[in-house]
Image (cartoon, rainbow, N blue to C red):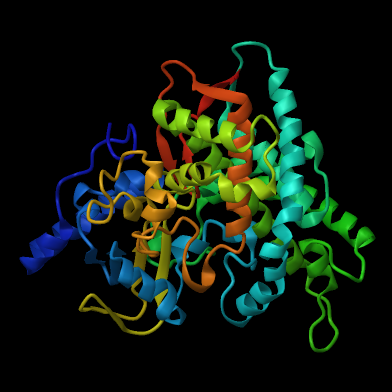
Length: 469
């Protein structure tokens, strides 16, 4: 078993060391090594990391005229993502694949637009709303659990799909006040799956900043998926316009009630882009986290047993509530450790606007800065037994020892995920509700291989049997 499950072992060559020897041949070898890696990135981004990347704090090299820096040093990550964050914008690697789907939404926008939209949308995920949101999570969780109890014996469900359908309904109700229903949920799920199939692979052209206007045949297949996605968004938007009051009750109300200094409403395309962004960010990552969590618990029976003991002690057979969350410390630790090992957003990249310096190395303007949470969270200099599932790392006393920029499943700095606290609350509640009623067991002999594309899913899914407890 390698770091990435069944992914083939990485090459042992080190382009940074080769570069020190100088000369044309060394530079050529370095470029060829990187180009081979980029080919791997297209198929599975996490398979591209050589073993030495898990041991070094900074790796710097050039491909043609582009300087690339892979950063595993928490203080340097803090500089790029926080203290000097204004000097670093999202790179083409981060934006091009999602641009056709998310447009100018919060996830991709920059500058004044991002600042305005972030400030406008922040109240929708404020902590004072979480208790009310928890009620929606619990209601939908109960409905799902009742359906799982009705399954015929020995039925396997793909957990990623199962939890995605659940969390999609939850985020739509919370953020848009709209109940999707089975048919719309399925349409959104299939549309995004098709979009990932066409746009999910990193393209070498993005590394070099080639604009999306340059033809990429594989990405044309995503247009149909976007149209199907937009059919549902338009239906939600029309419902929002009919029901929107003067006092915003949800994010869609906030977007529709917005007026600028001249009294003009938000452009319809931007409303659509923000809806798409919050929908995807608000359900995809939570569903993936739950899927990996139950996979890890099944592989680690002692951790599963400890979780069950906590649920019995804290909840005592009742339905978990928002008020129970502070007492579900081990359940929260299971989610945090799952996010460490399998961060749904497995890589962040930035592009330097102006010259900078990182760990004594000059960073030229336009350099690409790569911060892989997959790599960082499994780094040998930062974690004891980094590939082991150990929720105790995130128990209250132990978590204080973790550098905040060594663990970044939701990003960091000003651009940290807007729905971070909502996502954690939802994941812990659904983990507790599901584990209270079921043990999930992986289909015998099914290989589970992490696949790093837009998000970190399993290549062939994680089919599990929901065994009633």
